[in-house]
Length: 290
Image (cartoon, rainbow, N blue to C red; front, side):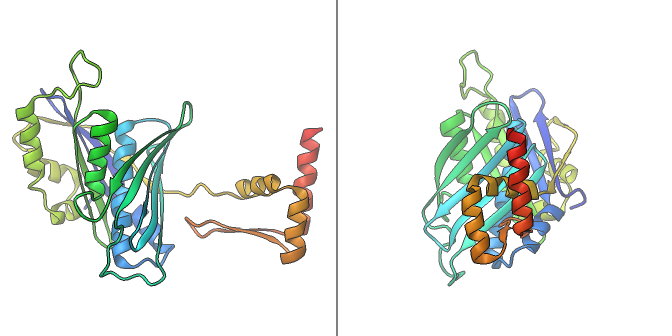
């Protein structure tokens, strides 16, 4: 894949169908390098990262979009998020006695959360499992139920690369949210997309994939948007958490442990505050209040 860590939008001219294609390599590997996940968990995490990249660019807003699943299988929790259509991070939690022979997710729920910088937080929830309600199908259900938009999603991951393709029928009737679209055109492009193989998506660049699939269609491809791994943790955020803890409670922790330590679960960055740091933190906070 010659153009990894990108998501790219395309449109089918003379139809009301749009698409997104994404590929992740460096950002995917940076997430995996920070955790010793079993391979089935690594691949599932890759699919989630590809999915959240697709959705973030599809919805086009400033803020954070996250996918989080809690299941009854070997993977207890998995979350991937994309911030401002470019910054990715992800994490998974799995059973200590993990077994690849058992269901990864089992029956669970997938939460799609949208947190715009300006506006209200929104969350949609759909069922997910390792069978017919895989991540791809769960996302398709979400768009059909919550957005009233026909959507198809294909997700692939191997130990090195994660990729995804999304097709969506855009409403175009006078009725708000109608599913009206040229059925022949929709069925045709979906049928073509279903011929896509994992090998093609995991080894070919975006342009080649789209040409192979839709060479008989008029496809308009837009400029690609770059993606990267980036964690939102900072020392300042940890300091704010200590302030919320309160000075009295912070001093209790210091007396018991000698320092206050905060470890980021996403990137494993370690932050610690000694007695002098905590004293300075609360003195500075009091001065700001006066």
